[in-house]
Image (cartoon, rainbow, N blue to C red):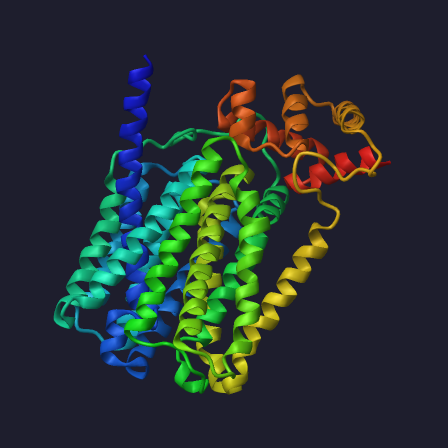
Length: 482
């Protein structure tokens, strides 16, 4: 029996790894299209390729905005996605993206086709990610970034006449990944939440509470990415060509290693998302805040390279964190992954275009805008997180014994459970949430599926009239501190 379980896990891991590499091929396509060290950019020059990159951002914005409007009109309901639907949408996106690369079109038309096609592929892949466990999400994201780094490095050395064809092959691989026989996991193709669901307003509130920190950070990084794209307008010194391409690959490899480590942590029952959001990303914010002040002073190539690697790793970490958070929040709050994808695509497109254009208006001083925005960002997070306790227990007076604190928290959980008329199972789930445990840990502790845990959590939120885990923990600990 144990051998069969090990064989099953190995088979599942191989299928996930293959799919993750295909998703990495899709990210590599985006790198070729919009990164300033993409093979086509280096061959054509920044000025010649800028219309293509701008139109690609516009394609992301148009499709993303359309998805947001559509699902807002539908009340954010989760649509009945299935594997076949993902494959069809991804296939249409792949066809449009390939046309953008292989058909001789004006730069604006080719970029728009690339943006729309990649957007449809990302929409299908986000639904695929929403059906994975947290450990699988981190594993797949890390392997995808590693694949992106390898593909980007290879395309850098391919003769330029073969780059469009190579990119079209990567697009095809991104669609093939959706065809692989990977199980839909805990959420089946037509699974519905158990019990009464949340109202549209409550679902949206829960979705926003679980995503705004990494998503806003990702939008700022896209804005920074945009205005650092054409550094000729900013009159600052940056590595370029092979040096910057090297920084990009190493930065992606560093991001991949961090996601892989967090995947192992999540598989052991740890809350990998909390570690990523509360520890790793704030450290990366410091890189974006400090880096502009080194641009106006003489620095060696080594210092530029270190900051460049950390910058590219920051891009990977923030974009990966937003991707994981949206796929998880869509599943937890019962909001359609189409709406989540729309938020990401519209935000990425808007911020990328804004970054590309703001350098024309502000010139070199724009290099400090990223530092200013990230400073406000981390201050806001610090203020918002002040009443929220990170971890298993509330902050207690120095002389308060731990056992007494646990007793007070348990008593207050019971009082709130009575007030909200929770079922016995909902009481157990809430007590474990109050101590900071992750969904996989709770599922293992209660011997239920992770999907069942999420259903009980949604019911607790509905009865308590709240929208997020943070609000629940704050209510419990406020009572414990009283």
